[in-house]
Image (cartoon, rainbow, N blue to C red; front, side):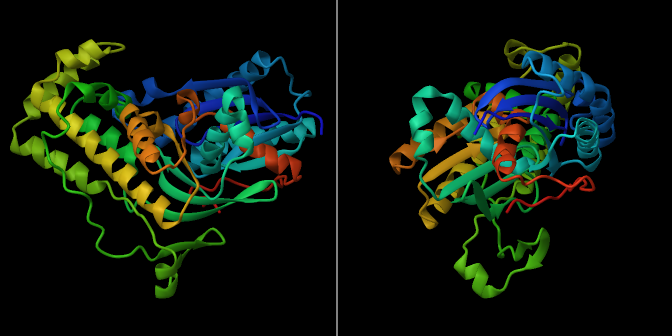
Length: 395
């Protein structure tokens, strides 16, 4: 089969991205327009602002991706776009533009699940690494994929089915995603947005054992399942046959708030917030200059608690389902401590652990174009009347 060049478009949250990927394996171009500066004053993503920024950026971003790939609108073989999950307004910008291109150019249109895109980011990185290429062909199933980001914390059991994969969700967060907890704690401590990278950089300068956070207590089984994309109640037998490994991070956010209040940290936090706001692009030295020992210890202890929970539950799920390979992907997969812990703990259990490269960990369009390739081969094209699915399930 000749090479297929797929133009991918991603606009599920606060990054406008476009990429050209050849045959699902080689990234020819990968352009991302970040909205961090837009949302930074608010300490998080503002959906309406995100949609407006996508409208401004999408045309120049797609043009740049095509130019860098030395492709044209007419030379690409198909157009892929994120259908969901994500912010509805943001998704619709990408979908509307992709539909317009596909219609005007008479090109196949492929709808992609954002979560499957993150899983394909690992495969994309493996296929581009020549030293691991042979290992990629011999990937052992079942694969357990932890997708952990600002909006998602999911565990999927993946199996090969013809040219595509099938997915079973065996765990998800009951409340906040892990990445959201990072961002909210950073905002609470006056460290700015996005919080995950800042906390990761500060953690080596604190004592991770200084503050004890008890593990989340999930006191009842999650009876929610998915069928045909809808939430359904699971019966007792299905719960027993399919053990779940759910997460919860609202409690640790509350614990941080109580710690701040009980240790009178408000004044120091406000001083730090104002000082960092006056620095256009704070460096590590700037953060350290405005963080006392208590704050550094609190940050390090918080990250250690999150990493312990993610690693512990994921490896427990790997043992319960006797998986052969582990993928860790999504924005939080760029966290240095998380990577080190998964690598060391996975090695102890003889479990191969794979991550995407850091540029492919966060939202990007290369992963969308890569995930679209099996659909392109199967001629699984989207009808022109499909729409955004903010709560889209992966199955």
